[in-house]
Length: 410
Image 1: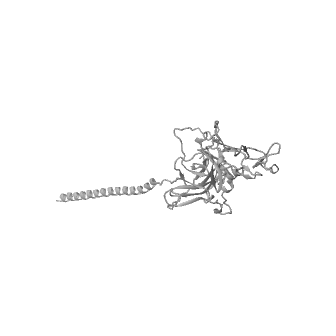
Image 2: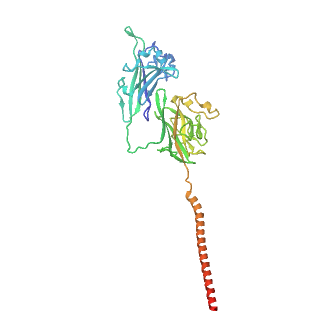
């Protein structure tokens, strides 16, 4: 892995000893027409192949590749390049001869390769590191031993100088650091570890990421960013598929599933890719950062939350054509490259903000009629009691009057 903000500045210098006509690898002057592959001397009588090219017409590319990782520095060159110059693997080393090269097969092609950890940089003969306020440089040389025959040397000596430039990182500690809620994975491509991160942001400006499990309302947009954070701005990133599940497990058969992206193409008509620099419509597979949005939704069954899963792949800068998905007339399945190196990111849970049920209104609706019934019943009870009491008094009064009348008559 390379430090965040890594600038993969690589300086290559190829020096061939015994640069005279007749030595293998020196191109023909009359055939030196492509100045990107061969260079003429000032007197126009000699020419040499530029860095990485070889052959009588400089028509072959040695595929020199420098890899600057967080903890290592590496260089590899095609085996055929050294065979052309009659250089055996045993004679290939760094300035310290104990740091030897090795042979490695990559995608069926044989390479000679040198990899050292950073802590052995000076031990293996690295030049003093150059540091300024922003960057630090590591410079090494891959060398060949001259093949001595008796007391003479006929074959050229090869020296490949290469440099890795890293940002000079200064750590600043905050008393309460804000850590974004994110998903992160490491994907290994050749000899380089790449860190890929998935985050959700609060709005279309992509300035504030959620710092905890997000809660989003229906009809709002969900803003997603998938980015290669280390090394920055080197690999091209392509999202192959994104889907939502009710289970945290991406391949779970429990619960519902909804597909947003399929084979790099939109599968949900609310999905739109956003250009990182201008906020305009962008395309998948064209940079190291991909932003897209979709309308918030929920599944018909509970729980009212879901997990977002995305499969991603990395492409080298010179592979930009095959990194773009083709979503037009060609079928989506045809747009996928054969067996790409993929990684999986999972994020969540993403919760749906549901409106609170109006329990107070319902309670009032139920309580008021019941209270009214009790009140009316209470008053009716009082009226009945009063009526009975009045009736008794009237009965008693009438009986008293009758008795008085009878006494008067007697």
